[in-house]
Length: 296
Image 1: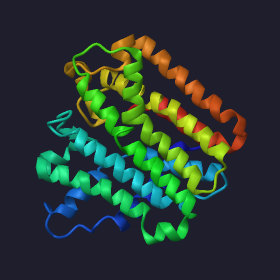
Image 2: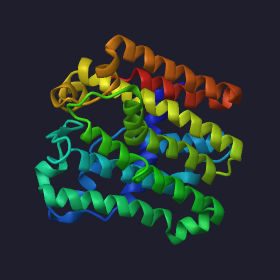
Image 3: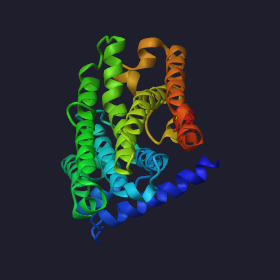
Image 4: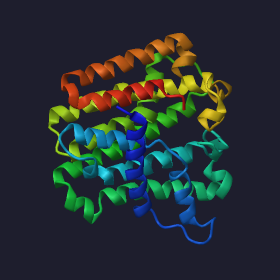
């Protein structure tokens, strides 16, 4: 399949939905509405929404069935990036080839814009339209999975461990916990919630949740490797910051070659998870390979 065209088509669906739901930009380029939209439309790949849509199709639904979930996922992901870039966190000046939100709008507005996107995600998922579209028990379960993934047990816990371990020696268990939280949790929720809201069986939801565990490892190890081996022009952000800040990563713990082996192991586990699904999982398998082979 032409994965490039596939991603382009899916991104267009997500971007339209985001544009429809986010507050409209007004004539003031430094307004709060503009701040909310700035990072959302900075050129993200929309991996999490696309995973949710593909999971929905895999269980017999349609991509459009989970467009509200897709919007929520991208809002949560973008909020996490905005806060991650702040001086109190990773202190990044550039993301996706553009100045980070706090460099344009200031730190206070960046914090508020991130907060607004996070709360908008759950506004969308609890809206009258969501209640009309999704079966109540499935919607409630998806909301629980999504809030857990974004909260203290998932993304926030991973970010806390990531910051608190800077400059320290970590073991493999700790690094795995960091990756599972700050990256894996939302990827896992994208797949499991996409399947759940599209009518997937408990077995299918569990399978895709397991896929998310391995895909999260692939995604983050690849990110860490790109920080070492990539270049800032292709990545759209500074490189070699992990080593400079003393971040605990699999390349730092194992070395580059062994980290690549670890990534390939998790990629194989992800593909093995999909194998029983046969041809209906071919696109999802292609996405997994893309995650492990991307250059940005």
